[in-house]
Image (spheres, one colour):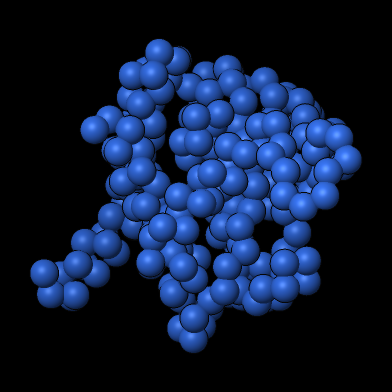
Length: 199
């Protein structure tokens, strides 16, 4: 289709939150097909820093990852299915946006969530998460003294989701001017990934 037509519907669906609604219904279906309840009991949040293009918009430098661009703040369940996506400047620390990423999940579930599994970047948020969401934060540490790459308990789930996103050319970097467009692009990719679970 002409790009103008594609962009028109993309813009409409972004404004109306249609992809978010589709993703919400689909992830519950996928969980039930796998023999699980529709809502998760343990979210797993993390960030992925990506470079931005010349289109402009919010961006800053992530000194830890040595990336100038944005962070994709994704929260999944233990099946790797997405429950929220939030895009912000790469220079912002995870702890600044953690509650913004987790808070909407509280209204989308019916009180099943008990524990949040996260890495050391979220350390220090235990009291805030408990007081505002009534959840406990479990900071997952690597098992034993290992050099090089290691698979951390629970943490590999969100890393796998990020690796799935790496297969999408449009997500190789952030090409969008606005962060809400970036979030919609990520949701579109995750929607296709979730659909593959039902194929």
